[in-house]
Length: 217
Image 1 (tube, rainbow, N blue to C red):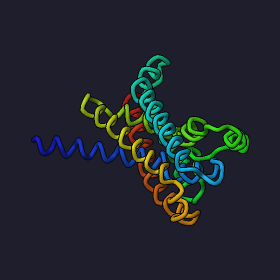
Image 2: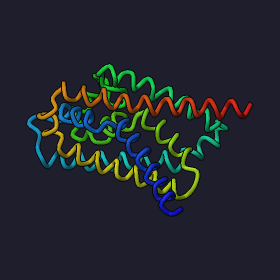
Image 3: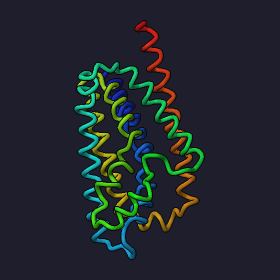
């Protein structure tokens, strides 16, 4: 029984972790970070931006995980409806990823890019929000929080968020090396693969949400 319980926790953790990393897409964010920083990039500057960005991602993720459910109850929103709309958002994002485009969570407007270049600090806006923590990430975290039915699953989700943030930090810290190795072609290949995973997760969200809503009425 204990082995089954541990196996279930590991399964939940992998589900949370893979889902978060694919939607965060830290590699794409690293490429954008390099393009926003003043050239030539300084190691100390990259270190500072990486720390501040990952810290902001962690705080924003915790706010969604810990208080998102309360906000839904406050506005009287059905949790299964969130699963459906969250799944649709992820499905749209996955289609763009499969097409090799930068997804919505990693896009920034010309105005945001200009503002980021003019300002010394790009770590919070636009890098952390909305490039890393955008609508797709928030929807994913909300649905994962709904799926965490007990304290063990909630702790598993929090651990997954922390580890995902650590991976984001090290990815951003090594952004210059990654961009040199991957280039645009490599990034698009990784984005397409991640798009398939995001699409599969989105399908599960939509089907599960519709089934639950159907049984309610």
